[in-house]
Length: 388
Image: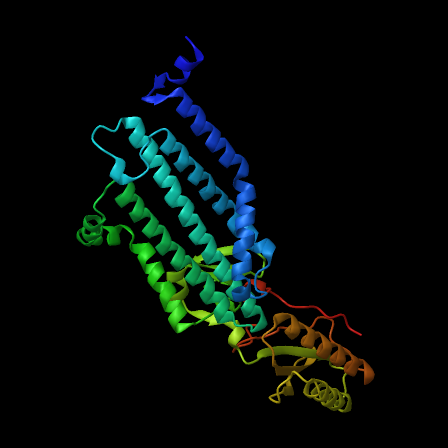
């Protein structure tokens, strides 16, 4: 068999030479797709640069778009190769006489092409989110940090649904209108099967509208305390004080009593301080005065201060201490307590008095002296202070 006969030999109704030409085209596309995609993204970045200003770097722009664009470029070369091999590339080219492998190749290509274009749209959405988030850094807003990721997920879901319907309609020749209409008939069954997911989705809208908390808030719900890192369609992600990453269904976030610790105007400090029975009345008066002065002079302490000699036992003279720290930062709250506690110890030492061997000390954040610490940080028992 001569070379000419080999080249004209037909396999699956396609000549060998057409296979070779198509393979050459696809190999060329495979080799050049990265180069062409880089050049194209450079051109696109220059076009968008004036709109995005300095919100997105060229490296970030390339990282988001190079891969999906390169895939689409390669699929364009596949389109040319299909044309050479006379494989259908459009729905109108399909006919009853089209062999099964032609239909299969057509559907694979169409699905890949729609997926590639959808990927580009999804990356463009990520690009828009990146622009908004970078602009939010210049004008901080926790609501923006919460709303933008939620809107991104919602738009991505819409794009994915549209792409799926396009594949059904254009690739598999399904009557999309009938499918969408049929959803109304089976809607009740679907809703019943996805009852929990729908409840969580509705709860997410409630969270956004009512805003009991936003991303970045320190919240306590049930036995869980931590910072809100993300609010999604189905769940809220919380970073606990133990640094665990906990996923809580949105329905639970609105059904259970929720304490937004970040929205407190101040944090309460409460403890009982026990001095020895050897402490004289003069010493006690002086200690109380020094303590009131130390607490009141701090810039972050509110004027509602209580330092009272409230209890006299056989072993000690007890002083009740309560004040409020104006801060929503837990670390700053601890710093203020530490600073004031050192001044209290110095005041006791200055007058020559001393603490009892064991002093029950509690830090309170609510009524009844239950402690301002989050539930997960509260400790049973007391803090021992060595006597001077």
